[in-house]
Length: 428
Image (cartoon, rainbow, N blue to C red; front, side):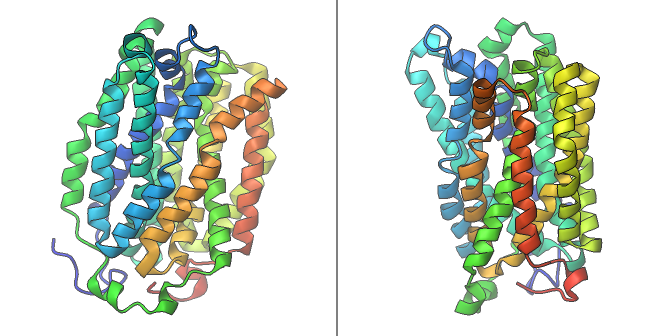
């Protein structure tokens, strides 16, 4: 299908074409998320107890290191998406992610090559972070530009839906591996299989993205005035608050895999079952959230989720810590995952719609990456550290409530961007 000649907001793409972006996004996030889910096993492999008593903390810190290069990726690849096009930027980020995940999966353990093992681990995580930092801006810009004005919420919600598909896929892989393998085998090589599964589908992602049309045209770059490129400081601050809150909540809830094993003392298989529940429920709820935000607006959907989350987070974690049974953990995870969709998707949609098209890819990439790197990166490390410091298993609930309130304040101050509310379909 040739790239349309007019503005993409008027000549939008069918959903089946946009699905190629979503699939590629899911593959990138699967690779990035798998590190978090296998933090304990990776800690045993690269930070053995014979060398340190803080293997899990070091593993989580290495996971966070991947966020250091996300702002750089957001700048370099995001601005490349504004200068050259969304499609080449998405291809570049995906290729880099594939190369880094293959290198990580094949890196020998500390027992085999000593200190070079964690050094290589860190290097590959930095490349991963750079790639993922450059993914969000171009791909989300593509989704909002490919959508009919009254379906932007639904199209952009596919960004989070495919991230949650990655959570589900990583959870399934983890559940199967932890069920079939002994703990020793999982530590030695089982976690590598999960990474290699993601690597195997990289060629598919490259093929799908190479066949996409371009949504950024010469006129979009050449005719944009300085005023049309301008982003106010107020918008930047509110966007940072919104996306930081969304990122903290996402990674805080995804910590359930490690939390169930480390704090609730559940088996690895049961812990990955919780991850599967989170992924499945969020996958279903994300597009519903997007569609609802198209019907009634971005603000009502997110602020409704904020109120419910503030009321439910502490009781949910209290139930998990008191009863410590799989059904209770799965039930609480399901509720929090559904609410996650109604909290995070409207935030991303509102920020993306608010940014000028001529600089949307780079600006969104930078804002998202900075908020994720400064706040999201430290979430799991901070939760684990605070649990160790206070001895309270309710730390995740209070931590997430703080993020939810910050996001709610930002959305209250943000202007409504849904065309159904503003009575127009702005072409920025």
